[in-house]
Image (tube, rainbow, N blue to C red; front, side, top):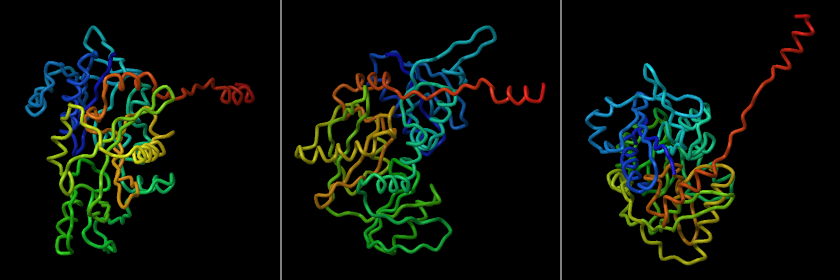
Length: 345
């Protein structure tokens, strides 16, 4: 399998993307991998596989490596006398802004580059937590009740404490706080508004069970990972998730009933169907009072949730051969020719 790993990007999750790419180098060691790093200034660099180490990026050493440009169907490296094309399927591993907000998806679509990852419409409904709630409502998938607050506005919260404050367009638990009483609210809002001008408020559910499930569609069939019950305290903060993204050992499946497994997969498929084709995503669910609730959609999960699959490399290869094709529109200028002919030109 030939695969190009695209990582980095200009987002608060830039470093997590680097960690994910380094992890996938190990998990996909049998594949012929090309590594392309997107700097925060949106310059693309071809990274030597032997240099896929955290220090390469923290020290700025990557800036000495070849720069690439996008061309029709591929990335290219141009020199004075030659041009090299890198035309393997791209795995979009840019977390957060750029990668999950639809920017990279639109760019790759524009240049007709084949890629694994969410398309721009899927990004719209998964990057912004407000739109994820709207999607749930439209699909009949239950989610945690919520309220929306905006920066520099007078906002009233009607949800009873304790509550969770989340930036609307950010992952990895960055800017997230649990607020147990009103005296803690202003500080939590200040933290969240540092990262986004819109935040989501949800009730903190005592005694909730959480389950993670990943999956993808290949050959017109849904393929699911194991169901994981993540071990955590009140919630996974940024530092815990940062370490979590470097996981490469497969985890054990959750000790749950077949009936609950079926319910989780059913909700996952409702979310995925006809929206996330071409992507491997992870959905995080809550089970509260025997009710399945979608917590969030991870359109580009950390390290692609490799640890949830028995044979991750085969999953990526199968997905790479089942990517949706965008219809190419061509014009024969028939309309313009007819106008010109009518005018005698």
